[in-house]
Image (cartoon, rainbow, N blue to C red; front, side, top):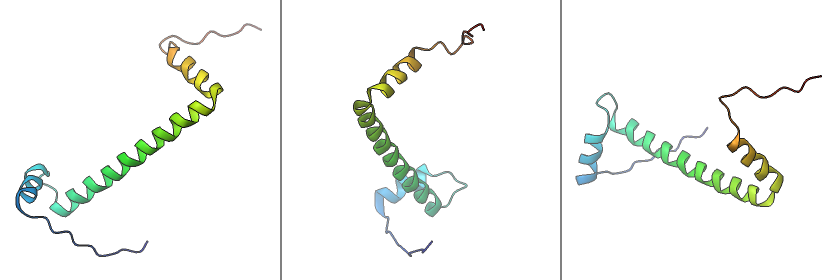
Length: 83
């Protein structure tokens, strides 16, 4: 993967807030990188949820299956058919 050197200047109240918020065992760079990574992941999950919601709108059989799954009693073993 190609790495691009990037510098972001953080100063003033934002810098102070980040310094207070980060774990003492982490550098500021590592902490900010983790925040950015987490935010990108959050955005990806929102997009995935929106796409799945659209998929459920378009596929009634999947929606019915999901509703059945939601109602399932997962604490009780499933009934087995006798042969």
